Image (cartoon, rainbow, N blue to C red; front, side, top):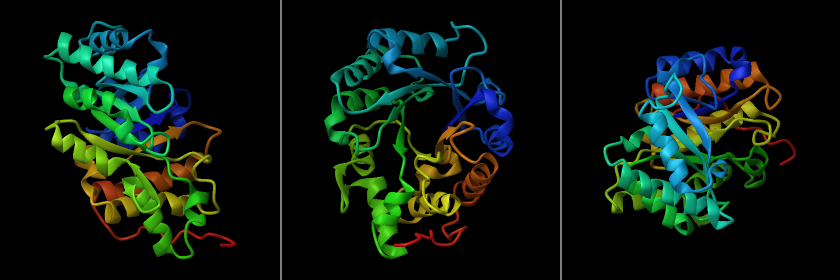
Length: 285
């Protein structure tokens, strides 16, 4: 549901802008108000920009309670929870705990956290923060930045490569044994959390680095819809698949935007499970 889009080059993304305007559960992620209106805006806050979790929580509360400069966004999203040094995890844990304690009436569904893929850190290792986020009912946007080249390197057929991609999405099995999305969903259920889980696909050249970026982009939607067991996560009612990031210089604007919005219409809005594009060609493999 969260689509990171450069406001300065908003004119480059007319189809994406129309999609976000038309779909009430989608959001345009940016640091400044986007052209789609504040009701579709998710204000990005960098976790490292705050001295501690309480300061971050106070900022989230102030924004969502309308105590910041207008216009007020519909959502706030924190960028990001990941592995490595403990400060990020501690700040997000303290932020969620502060919001639950100091703002119990605040709608937890109006703030969200980006969660780096399990290849960065297994999700069970992030449980001290994730449990607080889940208890607060915040949305978790899981970064599913699959790499085109890695897809082609992991198998000699579409079937083998699709199996690799499904493992990459889910975690905890096969070629991706670290606890990931499937573990997170189970954790959410065990805690009785009302948090929404959503997936974000990478759309820049860094990730779509092979010979057929449009076909690989379609394949990500297809594999998620047919092989993960969580097709509803990218359904339009849940905000659809998100994207990172739409910024000139990082991708071919018209081609990539057209492929993404066509796939979104096909898999997220229409709920289809047949491929929109053909198999991903992997030259020399």
